[in-house]
Image 1 (cartoon, helix red, strand yellow):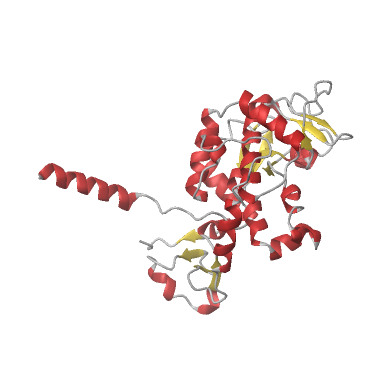
Image 2 (spheres, rainbow, N blue to C red; image 1 turned 90 degrees about the horizontal axis):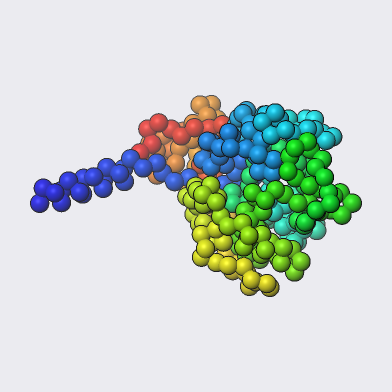
Length: 313
């Protein structure tokens, strides 16, 4: 009897000391902050995605690149070469151009009118820190093999042929790129050429998930509410793969459920920069309407520099 009571108490202690899970970010700005705080907070010494350069965190989601750590040399854009940027592994223009909103006004129109685009742009599975200049030079070019191309950024193992609109990343990230592309195309029902499918399928086979890729996936799954099944092995991409379209089914209802009155949403105090949850935070109903700023998720509040009220249960 005593042992069973101790077990129950131990379980309750764990349950009540675990931090509340953050909701998936609903904007790119919120996603960058969450990626820094919850996914890459301890990875600055492990190096940027394409070049393996170390960086120092700066600001809420930025960083300053240590060029000497990776032998990086600026090609043309010194300002962007000096900082890390949050790279969309599947470019925003690629998935945006497959949405009607893009045809009617580009990225800004999509951000204002299309909840699915916002979900794709803020998807943490698709974000990684990269040298800003590499992010710019990579653009939305297709992936390919460039055996006759030299490096353009010092010792950074990243090849780009601007005339062919093609890039080849280092071997260490080829498999990871493939599995992110499979996930994004499967999740949001995107189209991919046969040539790109074949190349990425080869990279997926040749470069299986590393320990860090699996840990990254676990960290992100706790925030997004789901893992990348192409990393966990639950799904496998085959030529002319049939997409699950899971992201199209999950993104719209959450957006449609938002109330213009703010019911059920997170309430921030513009004077104190403290936010309160609808449940478990006594200050939620005590705040003056003139001080209120509404947020759709904790990630959004954190991205704007707010902190959680200390008396929230």
